[in-house]
Structure formats: structure tokens, C-alpha cells
Image (spheres, rainbow, N blue to C red):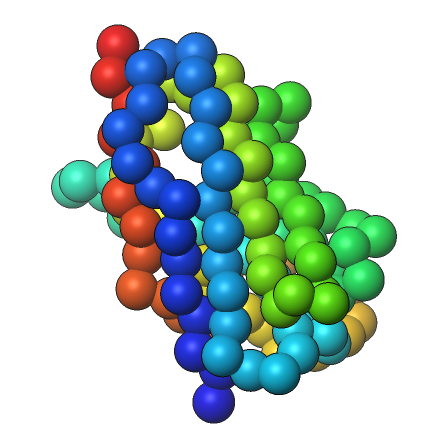
Length: 126
């Protein structure tokens, strides 16, 4: 079982930045592909970004490319989402997710990820 805990959400102004963190109770996140999803009110949960276990591969949804950066520190069992140039449409609950597997593949479906955090709210004001 992998427990994931997100933090770093909050209120930001448009054009501002926030950094989300996802920590795990597991001793290591190595061999887990990690991802961030988000869910805005009244909308389905959507993929935001993913990163391979080594950090060498990443994938982003088009709407955040060039603004968000996913990274990981396996020595601290933490995954990050640096969000810059925030827009009001980025407002959502952000979830961290883990896929148990070391082979990188583009995985954008929430059904691919077995482990989830409880989410952290990000609100961007205009």
C-alpha cells in the first residue's frame, strides 16, 4: 500500500506561482511512475503531468506546457509540481497519483494509477 499526501496548495493571483509537493509513506518511490491530476468544480478529473521513476521522462497536458514542471526527489520520496504563470482556469483540486511500474509509458488515464492522495486545493484569482 502506498499512501500519498499532497501539500502546497492555496490561493494565488493570476500570473503567480505555487509549488505542490507529494510525499509518500513508503520507503521509496523508486520504480513508481508518478502523476498529477486535477479536478475543477463540475468537471471530470483530468491529467496534468507525469514523470518516470528516474525523472528522465515527462509528459504534460497541452494546457500547462511551458508553465508547469513536474520533478521528483527519490531520496526524499517526494514529487513536485511547480506551477508558474497561473491562470484562473488552473483552479482545481490537485491530486498526486502513483503507478507501480518502472517502464515508462505515456499514461494519462486515471485508471492507470492505483494509488492516490487526498488532494490539495489550488485557487487562482483573476
